[in-house]
Length: 103
Image (cartoon, rainbow, N blue to C red; front, side, top):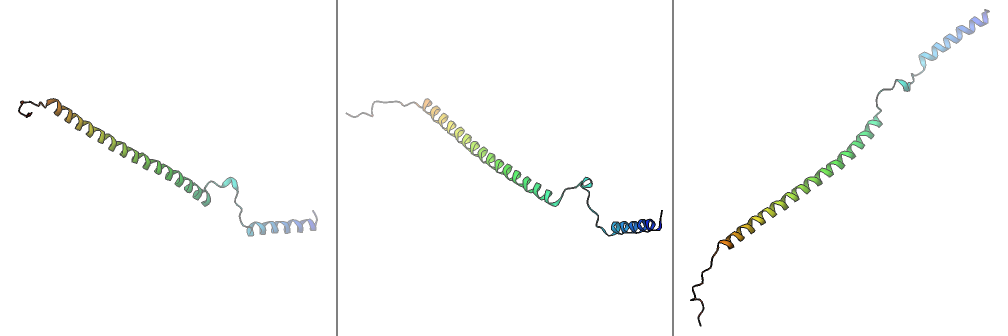
């Protein structure tokens, strides 16, 4: 090994060491195990859209249930009134005494 090769090796080691110390570390994609802020925000927006759709569906179901409950209660009360009227008519007896017709 000559002097020029020794100097070349020494200088190349110093330069490569200097590069290693001054370069910014690069992220290795294989080492990334977390989520980025953009991914989290997009997933939160998607979750919000899904939840708002489900909330709208739930409100519609509750409104429909309340409407059906009111309709059923009204029909039950109407049936009770009709039953009362029909039983009252069945039990009523009108007695004609003959004095009501004046001639």
